[in-house]
Length: 220
Image (cartoon, rainbow, N blue to C red; front, side, top):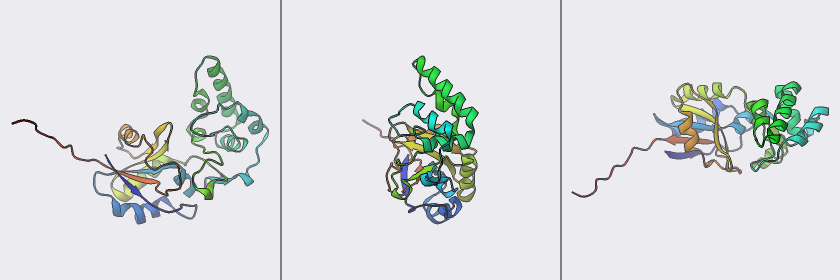
């Protein structure tokens, strides 16, 4: 796969996926390409970035964040502010079930049960003070709403299969939303090294272009 970086500049709630695709992406794609869009900028454009100054952690958020395991790739819900956002997304009962599952999993030497039970909307939350974009450093960014629909909209605008991806320098790439005929495994493999980066490069869109195989005949 050839990977083509698409620079968009800073994306905010004043922008939309459709407008970004029309202005920045469509001029660069051709039939057969696959368009990947990072999940955090999609969420930002949906108005799902919340400044920590506006988050008031409740009782359960102040208690439960301490029980979230530290991970190498970020803070996740190990913060009262991001935990509060998770509670607002999926509800206290589900977060409590996730905490119990996580504690039980730890006793059995297993990890990942908390986020498995909490669900993808909780797992996609990016904590404050983790964004490489300074304008959102003091924000908690929730996961995008209906990422499959977002990807399908991109396909309808461009004719190309599309994916919303959550990529990280440590865990690789997860496809969190895809158009109807997307090869999600292919996209995850092609984006495994997080080519968009964790910083402020402002390249949330990567176009994947299949390269024809080059056969070499050796000898006579």
